[in-house]
Length: 426
Image (spheres, helix red, strand yellow):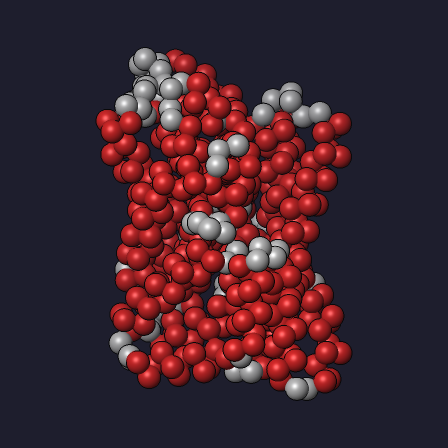
């Protein structure tokens, strides 16, 4: 196992793409086992990891995000929310959080939410006098809401790995998403005087707000259709991605901004992003398989239970481990490796599968914005052209507030389980 850890850490430090880090570590693990027949099924394991029907919604969610950005749907949402809260100091910052919540209920992806807001909102915030590093860090942090508020690609993958009810997880993400959004709003409120954040509009205009609401109705209906359709059983969570694409197209047509000439570009962008995710899943499946064969999860479980048998302490240990994991690994890869390790510990600690699944996914999602390998951090930096070191400092308060909210979720199960239980899903 030492050889495997060495391969993993060395390739990670050298900056090797995470999919190859996982593949090489898995290959090294097979070599240390000394069973030649295992090499014959490595390719099968790669494709088996990707060949899961429930994962088909992921490329559709990615495509929906591309379509919304290209067709002007996002701009209508921002204009409407701005009329509601723009008259407060720091109003445009609050707009980012609220719009991120709405987009999250459509896209299900941190990178998609961050990329859209970076392109549309950050230039406007800088123009209004907001510090560029604060603006970009706020958008980056808001991306965390993408995989939490349903529907969520992260929840989809966890459900595929564990068999936990996806509908229950989707509903379980509602309150946590709102809680983290409120935590971010608190951070903004503390920064209003410190950074001298300006107002976006002079006063609240009820007539303008109503007009903006009417214009935003097609965009606002998209998340209502998605969440309502899944909840009512009209379509499955796996089908919701295709529904999101269809809804984004219809909204774009209503706004008169949908030009079918953009489809080749939208498809190419969607294919590239999807391919990156599925390659990680495929190569990561090798690592997950070899760990299962070597009974690594059972070994770690025994080691932890040898230290403590207190449920509260075990949860705190998992919390600390996942913070470190989030700083060092991409979320999809971390889920592949640590789900079989953490699930038995969570069960022993008294966490229900849905409660643990939502909490675990949120912890890994926060890792998307933590240095040094946070994928959403890189996306934000690339789009805004702001260096990572300048982004990281103003991002820290948002990360801390999200972690505090997540720690609260771990010890107060009803924050996750209330909605699923109310709907008879758990």
